[in-house]
Image 1 (cartoon, rainbow, N blue to C red):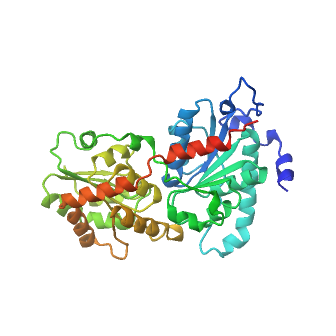
Image 2 (cartoon, helix red, strand yellow; image 1 turned 45 degrees about the vertical axis):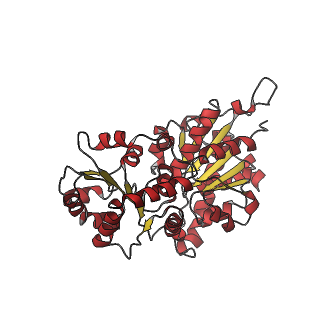
Image 3 (cartoon, helix red, strand yellow; image 1 turned 30 degrees about the horizontal axis):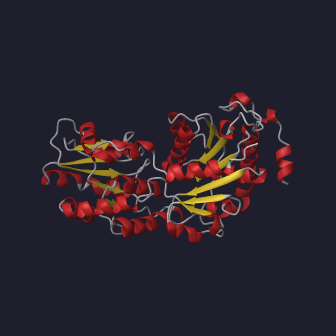
Length: 408
């Protein structure tokens, strides 16, 4: 079946000018030609920054190791990957996503999903035929599943990278075809059928965070000329976190009025920003933003981070050594965020507040209880740094190179 699909595709199916690369046939390695010079890698990632930024971090590291390698990112045409990937300097081509709805046995999944999946796999088979990659890396999102299945059908080597402490259905299925499974946490290994394929690497964190701006530089960026003693950074996610935003509306003014030298950087999310901007009064100690493009400087400035518990945010908190209050989304698939938050509480002492517990008083008390206790903040910071896996990008890049060392 795989041979039928693959051999029946014609190069003219997708005009070359529609794709951001020039397909080249695989060159036979010789003594004068390094295999890495011809290395072609596809990344399948989409939906949220938690899927996209790990892929970009891995690609960045691969590019430093092998500047001549060719990359292609596959994602949805309307997702944030369509702008984030080109902005990071990598080629991007769109592919249809395959959204899995809950409950799993819904009418959509039973009757429509098979046809959507087949169409998306066929589209991805064409992309893979034209780019002719040596390896495909899937980091998640609805577009990742059909791209990785297409790789499995055509015999292309496959790596999947699971960011969360508990995996979803898609990666559970893909793990059956993957050559290697890169996981962020030791506890994730037990979730897979083939534990022998698992490599615990941590989550790849973007280079801008790993390079680490100074606290002074971060504070000057957001509050130039102010005498800043402490900074609380509130991350509502790229799209927003309604419960966190509502709680903060009733908290920020009291916190700022009762704590001289305290400043707040508050990312509301793009969708929530207009409403929050209309409700929040201007204050010199508050920076309200829909999205933080220079989030590396926000982390640098922070003494405390209040956030959802997405896997990548948790990894960034660990890598930057920040005390944190985590409010996991109850809507995350398979309860990922609650499990991530519980793990963070164990390894880094993060304060976890569920949405059922969240109100303005609970959030205010949690923030005040941490920023008033310097020894506690120092302990939380030390535990976070100790638990961080800062070489994830390098380890995954080296694994990719080792799997493609026999390029022919």
